[in-house]
Image 1 (cartoon, rainbow, N blue to C red):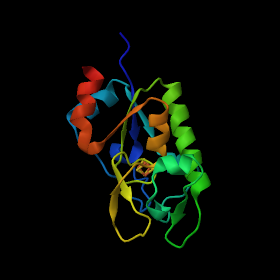
Image 2: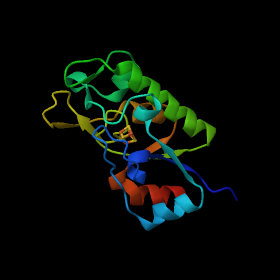
Image 3: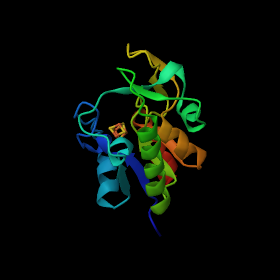
Length: 163
Ligand code: SF4
């Protein structure tokens, strides 16, 4: 039987790829097992799109969500107002390509990110205000039928993957 694969945010896997050069490592023995079983496909949409480490933090503007960016109504901007929508969209498409190529029907993504957020993001004010919503990569994956879980939902993902 082929073991189901899961797309995972690289920063959860300990890669220092976040905007500030840090990781957001999720330490879990089950995740370690999945890695050893070859079930984990690591992606960082932003770095795969060519953005540098470190890079300026970015948020989806005006309290919009990732779906609005995909529909070309929303924008992703850096704190100084620079529009980086194109790069974030490119990263989302690359992540989707990886998911399709590896037949991932599940993804474990870092919440809060304008790319990977699955449950919450920030409102575009750069004042640390969280809102319900999803990043552009999470939105694109969901539009293609991939179930997205955040790191706080790891046990739900484990149940879905092996259930
Ligand atoms: Fe992590 Fe996703 Fe941000 Fe890359 S784009 S640093 S994988 S949250």
